[in-house]
Image (cartoon, rainbow, N blue to C red):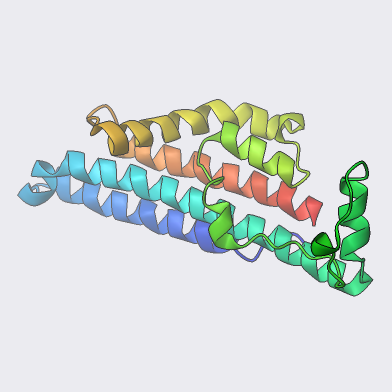
Length: 196
C-alpha cells in the first residue's frame, strides 16, 4: 500500500484551504478592498489556523483506524486464539474463566476511543504512534518537521484556549504552514503504510 485511503482527501482539503486564503487575501489587497475581510482579518486568520490543525487531527484518527482495520483483517485470516494471547500477556496472573473468550483475536479499539490520544502535537503523536509500532524518533523527516509542527499547534492552542491574537501571522505564513502540514501528513502516511 502506497497511501492510506485518507491521505489524498486531507491533502486536497488543505489545498482548498490555500485557495480560500488566497481569495481572502485578494479581497483585502484589491484596488477596492473588501471592508468585511479587512475588519475581520484576525478572525479569518484564527479560523484558518484552527481548521488546518483540525484537518491534521482528523487525518491522524482516520489513518490510524486504517492500521487497526488492516490488522483486524490479517488477524481474521489467521484465526489466532484470543485466550492464548491474553494468557501470554499476563503469564504470571491466574487466568479466570470469566476472562476467557472462545473467539479469534481482534483489536477492539474504535474510532471514538482514539479521540483521547489524537493530538496535533508531534510529541503526543510520537507517543501514540509508538503504540502502533511506529517509532517516529527514528525517522529523520519527522525529526526535521516536529518543531515546526509543534509551533503551528501551539499557536492554534493559544488561540483556542486563551483567545490569543493572530496578528503576527500573515496569509503567506498560513499558506506556508499548510504546505508544512501537507509534507508532514505525507511522511506520516508513508510510515503508516510501511507498518501495514
